[in-house]
Image (cartoon, rainbow, N blue to C red; front, top):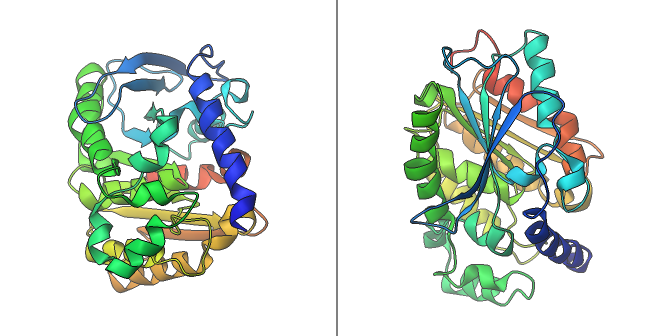
Length: 312
């Protein structure tokens, strides 16, 4: 199974480097403001796109959603695989139908050559034994992830929390409190979104993690990675009285690996006090690990986080 995923991943890395040279995406609705190179003391500079909803007014305050893989969100003509989330279509439709409140979307581009390093935290590594680490480091496709110092997820989260969020809050009319600040991502982006709400529960009031890449590697067998991730999740579960958690996965391609680990995460949430009021975990039969699949269902986590009448 592992070999089926290696070439597409390499292609994605190479192609996303080129994506930074492409023009601004064409939007169906809303306004996009691009910071071409947002400097950071923690990670490499990168583009950040700020999407403002239709009818945006500087006199109104807005909740904020921070999303990973920002270059994949708006226009398939500018993405490496010619797929997109279609956030500029999905969000306005939900606003117009009265299902959600308007919000600002901050699309944080990934740094393609080190995407997996930036989306993996060092914190769960305390749960690995020496033999676990040996297995991880010997993995041909992703062994470089597990050399310790290479991992940049904790630095990436510091960038989000201590540099990017203060900038957004000072330049746009945001509702800056935890109850109005959310984070979302897919695959490794889902994993780092889980880390974000666990590491910074005072900052993020909700996280949506689509097709969370619990496995780290591209297989289930002889793989200690998901068990360390789940142990970390259990020990750092945010307070259910003040947080909301969304998870999902499909059942084909890479998503076919996730079911047993997501079921364990669901049990952790139940035992930790989460209910249907503040958590949601869904399975989408036949759905693959693609932007098109996430586009088809992203209205669900958006409504879960931003639905009118909810106490965020």
